[in-house]
Figure 1 (cartoon, chains in turn orange, red, cyan, blue):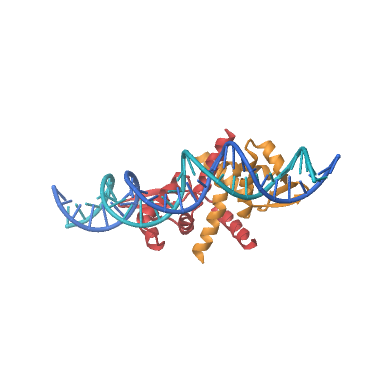
Figure 2: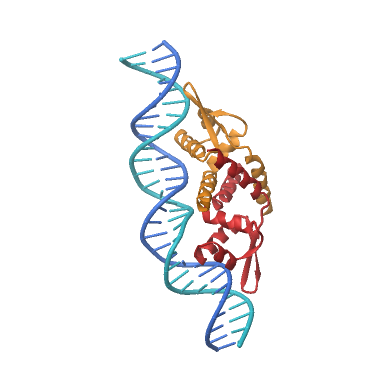
Length: 94
Length: 94
DNA sequence: ATTATATATTCCAATTATGGCATATTTAAT
DNA sequence: ATTAAATATGCCATAATTGGAATATATAAT
């Protein structure tokens, strides 16, 4: 029960424990974006971006929406901003 | 510069991306504890706990203090609670 | 039906994390 | 100086993650 909950939380943190995926989260904080926009703006291979998005989605951090050929991703979590601010403080401190 | 910042944040998330370490963070939320108390309360080997604590400390999430033979660890971060509440919401949703 | 475009998947080698066990280090007490 | 107790470190096999390259799938347009 309880340990299972820690597992699930760890899963979420794991999804966020990668610089590329963090950069994607940051980019999505600006609003919904299609994969192509993300690939254009961040400098990584399209398959890499795609895999990163899927990992974030599986963790429940973002959601997707199809429109023709495009897939639009957006944040599904509202409290990232606060926590990121907190992290910035930590990074300043040490 | 910027990518380096994402690296560092990813490092913090990585430290939190493990159920044992999350359980330790939760336990420390109650207040400062020595390693022995953590080992007694959580059911893991002492070396495992010790290594987990060091990883959390390196990430800047906890701090330590020596007193005789004992080493006391405590949280160095104030915003975990809010973010954990947010995670709970996510976990309820999916 | 063919072609083009957007996105996802598979495969793979290299790196990194995990957790157990044995052992080392440090401090205090006798 | 020895011993005991608390904590940290090193070693190791296994498992998971990483990111690149090639390929597959799906949708739309001609």
